[in-house]
Amino acid sequence: MALTDRYKICILITVLFCFTSSSYVFSYFIDGDSFSYLPLEKRILKVLNENNLSNRILNIESLSFRNTIIVGIWFYYGLSYVENQNDVYQDLMTYAKKLTELIFTSFPSVSELNLSGIFKYNHITEWRYDNPTFTASINRKHFDFFYSEDTPFDLFLDRVGRVYYSEALLSDDLSSLRAESYIEENTNRVSPPRKSGLFAKLRGFDFILRKTNKNGIYKNIIWRGNPKLKEIAITFDDGPKPIYTPLILEILKRYSVKATFFVVGKKALLYHYFIKDIIDNGHTVGNHTMHHLNLNLLPYSKKEGEILDAQSIISTLSGKRCKYFRPPGGSYDWKVEKVTRDNSLLIVLWTKETGDYFIPQEESKLLLLKAMASLVPGAIIIFHIGVKSTIEVLPEFLSYVKKKGYKIVPLEKLIENIKKSQGPEKTSRPYP
Image 1 (cartoon, one colour):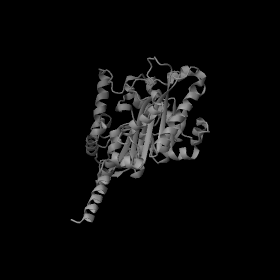
Image 2 (tube, one colour):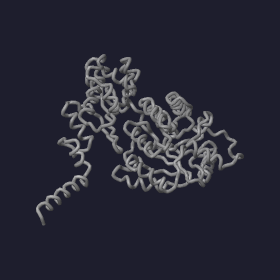
Image 3 (cartoon, one colour):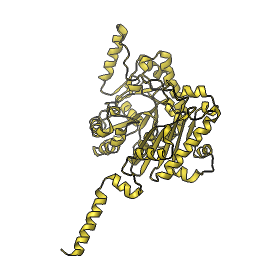
Image 4 (tube, helix red, strand yellow):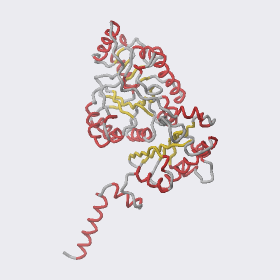
């Protein structure tokens, strides 16, 4: 073999190796840094540690879809880091500014940064500090266009327009700020005690009637569309949440799909800009209570408050009346039905449970199989925001649905078609 031919073969093998190597190797050649083999979260933490910024970090997450890479950072601020309570706000701005500048300058591939600041009263506390009292969403265009070292960070955020401040933070009310930082325990997986007696048996019989109703709609409750049409509706629960909500919106946009997002009222307040993004992208916002608690465990007044408080917030943020309600975990009773019926809300359940919140990312193929199995005519598909396995399988699932000849329609369209299939004599009830 000629020497020139050997050179050609060596060059060809080298080129093939570059394109068939793992994404981390490819990242190494693109970024040129010495730790590109590490996942992005660990790389970020390493840089933060080198700049003495890692001691406040609660969590770092990143997600990507095609060329979009979104990073979320949850961090602490407060009296644990400053002695004077009047310095809390400025301390928050200073730390958030350092994080923002470091991420966008050190990681040129990052498209968007979501910040969530949690107030910490002191070093030793029994409180669970999980609830942000400051949030912001900044993309690279915002940073390139508005950011300057000489510009105060709060002025920069005002120009970006995607920021939330607790009123207690702005008024230096630290006791209220401390209370806002606490998240009430989620009792969603706890079953209430079973009731006995005639009324309990009648309500149990009523529930059986609903389950045997093939049309998927009963009174003001729906769990399936028209079983004769190859169409489905896709829904997402428990949002909005940083990095997950914007990336899901990006995926849905790519596949020209409209979905319904059942949002938690408190989270809608904290991340109000994501609600606007959902609306602007042509999706629907539904009510998922104020704090995502098991409604069956609450007295009537609190059931009503959980539903109506969220209803008020969603209507204010979206500019339109919310028509759909989904109880957390699908748990509801006749009192919940009364509240929704009195307020012209349709309870929207689902056709089959995918259980995505139980499935880790490394087992995402199992979730994909379960989602595929839930594909039946008129199905209402349920996913949850905040689950990496859902992000992993969503593009492939959307492709599979269309490959099977199904239409993905907005929830409104699904409801409209089930009403038509029932005929005029069965649609006298004023469904939303």
